[in-house]
Image (cartoon, rainbow over all chains, first blue to last red; front, side, top):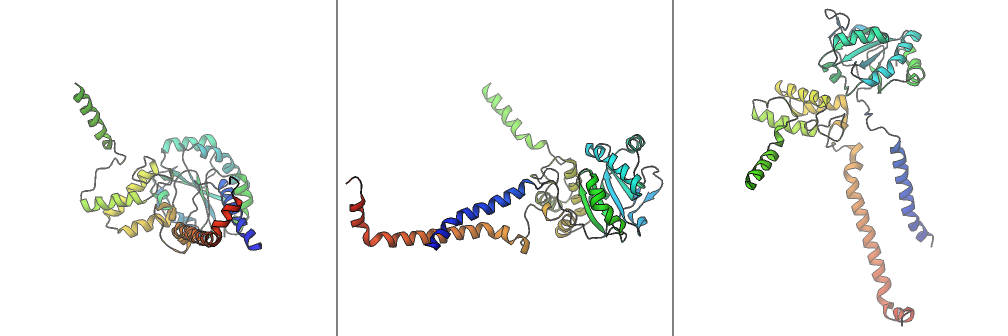
Amino acid sequence: MIRRYALYALPLLILVGLVGFFWRGLYLNPSQIPSPLIGKPAPSFDLPRLDDASRRIAPGDLQGQPFLLNVWATWCAACKQEHGTLVQFAQDTGVTIVGLDYKDERKAAQLWLEEHGDPYAVVAFDADGQAALDWGVYGAPETFLVDADGVIRAKHIGPLTPDVLYRDWLPRLKKGGR
Amino acid sequence: MRTAWVTLLLTALLAAPAFAIDKNPPLQDPQLQARYETLTHQLRCLVCQNESIANSTADLAADLRGQVRKMLQEGKSNEAIIDYMTDRYGQFVLYKPPVRPSTWLLWAGPFALLLLGAVGLAVVVRRRSRMVAPEAAPETEDEDPWA
């Protein structure tokens, strides 16, 4: 008899399981693809600087300190959304933020920083998006946390929020980013 | 007159593929071009996730096509190109996920469910045939409300 009830309960159990999966699926964002680069050495690049095309910048120059690499562009609406947070964060904490200006126009980008504030220690100008491709970027904004050893430790897709920066990343940045 | 219209319509339909997504001319070497097409159809555009990079007009898809083209011209193997993409964008960039422990459920799932269903069906059918066979005749006589 008990065996029989167990059999009747089976569809219910399967249903509960499925509902569990679907419930979780409701809160997953399919546009956020986890980066396989986390835990790997940051890909290198050698790009002209936004402020001065005759000078170059490579992530290797920053070895020894943790930093954020923020991919942005003037054509990117969500970048404007996060920009204020980023400016505030740079002022509050002094964390090194490297900008990667992604497939942008140099003049427009320079004006943009003048107008909205410049949180970046240095901005690399990635005109053709090759460096971004090497970093597995598929949109803007995207932000990477790179530790003092030059290893990528975290990636945020979409506009940064104070929660991510102050609550999740700042304590790690204080410990060398690891 | 009518045939003229039909011809015009057909020509217009045939011309549709001319609105190519890929603005680059085909690669000189037809073998490379064939590999280029296979690869770009296997890789997913990460912005418009239900399109391959061959079928997508997104900027990123164009960049990824350019990368595939560049690596082919450099003489890279198909595996090297696929590895380049998965190293940066993860397995998600592949339309056809590889068979490995983390994807066994994905690959075997449908067959496992089919098997489960078949076993279940067999059990039910066997049980029913056993139940009905010996007492079928008297029972129906007793319980038939229309008798």
